[in-house]
Every structure is written in C-alpha cells, then in structure tokens.
Length: 159
Image 1 (cartoon, rainbow, N blue to C red):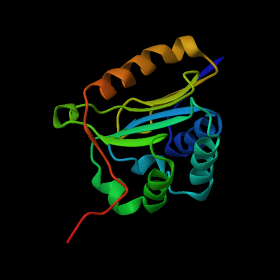
Image 2: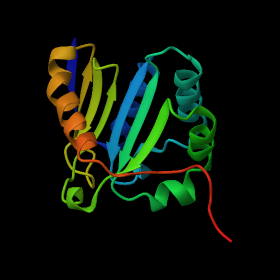
Image 3: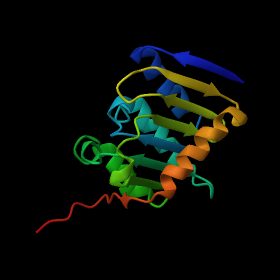
Image 4: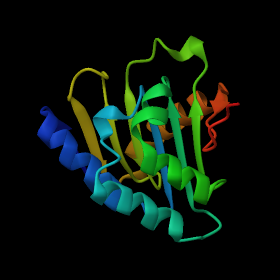
C-alpha cells in the first residue's frame, strides 16, 4: 500500500502506464479529452486490449470525457477497440454542466489510482494497492458517471 506525489509530466506519464498495467478487470477513466494520457501509444493500447480481451464477466473499461472531439479525431485505435469490445468498453461525453471539473481520474480495479488534481498540471497522486484510499475517488467517478452523458459510437454517420 503506497501513495506517492507526482510533480512532473514524465513521472505522470510513467504512472499512467503503471496503472494500465495494474488493471486486470476494470479501468475507470475521467479526463477532459484523454490527450495527457497518451492512450494511443502501442504499450497503452496493448494494455487496454489485454484488459478487454480477458472476457471475464466483470471486465469493464469505462471512459468519461468532457470533450469528445479529441477522441474521435486522434484516437483511432481506441475507437477500434470500442467497435470490437462494446459493451465492455464504453466512452461517454459528460454533460455540459460538468465542464467546470478540472481533475482527472484513472482507477484500476478500485485498488490503484492516479488522480491528477488539475488538467493543466502534472501534480498528481499515485495510489497503489489501497482500496481504502481509492474509495473516495471511486465514489467521485461513480457520481460523475451518474450525471449521464452521451455515449460515443464507433460508427461514423454521414450521407
């Protein structure tokens, strides 16, 4: 059970990969647009694919973004995973009234978390193997998810 303060973008980047590697059945993500998480990197897509390929009844990857344009335009591999692994993978654009939220959450199996306090800064808290410390962040994610939103579709609609 450890908790560590992250203060640089390089530490944050390493912590993101560590959390992804520690997510055997569930991963919850809340972020403005996913760009700081760099989920399109090969190692990160591989970790997400490994999570979703487990095909356990409890396997779940839930992503809530405030701005979905970045995901639609610059995350083709993530959108491919959405097409293949729905409903185990859901990506939701949060409602407009949540635009004032400035933190970011990455929670793996309710025991590991990376909490960035402000979207524009790397200052974060990394929690490893401590469900009690993760509980308030899990609850915050559940509240954000409970506000609803619009699910993203892997299909591009047009004429």
